[in-house]
Image (tube, helix red, strand yellow):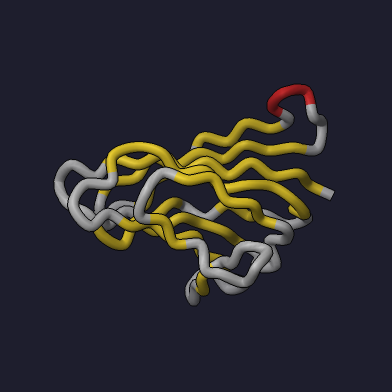
Length: 118
């Protein structure tokens, strides 16, 4: 459906190499990609109303067209159907975005990526 522009805050909490990227998504929305070059550690948090069957996944791409699922440190794809906080170790793709792949008219999610840059 719609591509949602994130709110980006550099160096939140006084950490000079950190960034907080937040997208607000409804069913069918994707987040505008964040170019995460140099990110080494962080977390992804999903909060809000998932609605019936709501699901959001984190994706990466090198070319900005073909996106693949991100994985957590254990190699499990980052796909959330309930509020959660997930660790990430490396963003190996040039761009990262959330993709709300399912839900209903009540689906209203906030996806927050907090990451430390090299």
